[in-house]
Amino acid sequence: VHLGVISYSIYMLHWLVKQVLTEPVLWISGQQLTELLSLPQQGLVVGLALVIVLLLAQASYQLVERPWRRRLVAGRFTDGAGLSSNKA
Image 1 (cartoon, rainbow, N blue to C red):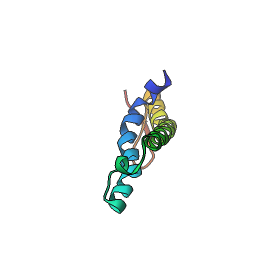
Image 2 (tube, rainbow, N blue to C red):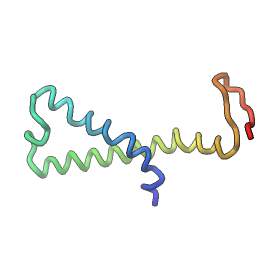
Image 3 (tube, rainbow, N blue to C red):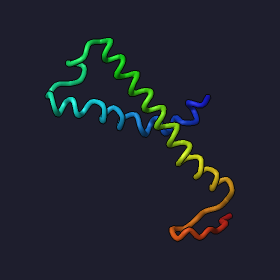
């Protein structure tokens, strides 16, 4: 159930994590990560990526999404100067 709550964050972060983990290898060696690693090593990289994505998604949900949702539910909107107003 909680994966559904953080699913948007997972969607937004998965590609970024994949790129950060694989692009430096491609730039340095000129080869894809799958060409350099054995199948068990690839599994470890995928597992690491999954853990990183889930941790970042949870942090994004707690620090970004939840505060915004609370403001929307409470009907509080703030402008750039920090002045709050209630909009119906």
